[in-house]
Amino acid sequence: MGKRLKKLGLRAQDTSELFFDNVRVPAENLLGGPAMENRGFICLMEQLPWERLQIAITAVAAAQSAIDQTVAYVKERKVFGQAVGAFQNTRYTLAELQTEVQVARVFVDKCCELVCDDKLDTATASMAKYWCSDLQCKVMDECVQLFGGYGYMWEYPITRAYADARVQRIYGGTNEIMKEVISRGMGLGGR
Ligand SMILES: Cc1cc2nc3c(=O)[nH]c(=O)nc-3n(C[C@H](O)[C@H](O)[C@H](O)COP(=O)(O)OP(=O)(O)OC[C@H]3O[C@@H](n4cnc5c(N)ncnc54)[C@H](O)[C@@H]3O)c2cc1C
Image (tube, rainbow, N blue to C red; front, side, top):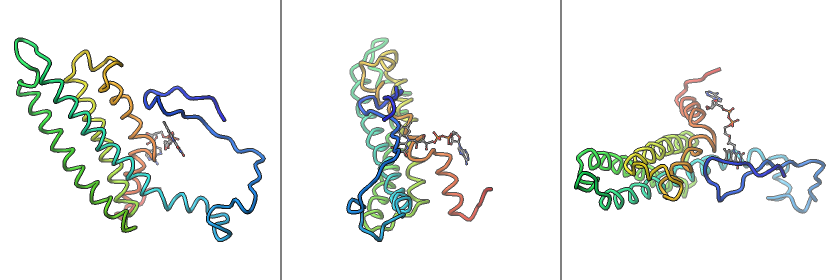
């Protein structure tokens, strides 16, 4: 096992490289039986839509949590004699974010139905992964802004949520790769 990597976020989760060198796996330990021999990569590929949907689900849940935390905070925090939540900018920002998260949630719910019926295709799962994780990062950024200076302090959960969000656009295939997959599904091939 490689050394534990120091990450920007997701610090409760240890991440390191695993090296398999001279490893012999007994035949009886083959997952899925003899028919699956040499099909490991195919098995992995078949599960990619579900992996991407899990990232989208996490994105929507984290974004909703951030909005909820921010609504509570702006009601309580007073500046210039009034709650931050009373400013039109705050109310409109949160209204827009809540609308977008609601839209994302409907799409993700639809994808959950599809995955349960084994009908979630790669392009649709890629749309969910890229769009919801982009939205998550946008929500975190706006929410941190509404927390002001406290939003930059590790003791506030919104700060950790901001740091944790960033990798969602990178792992599970970057969002640029998701757009590659989607465009190929539209018959638009690159090199
Ligand atoms: C915290 C964490 C956990 C991870 N967990 C796992 C795991 O459990 N299992 C696992 O297998 N991997 C895991 N990864 C790896 C992760 O999936 C990769 O980091 C990710 O897919 C991006 O690959 P890369 O790092 O090689 O970036 P690169 O491929 O080097 O990408 C660099 C940049 O180039 C862009 N780019 C690359 N190719 C193209 C292209 N064709 N067109 C346009 N732009 C392109 C990318 O979008 C990106 O912006 C993890 C990564 C992190 C950070």
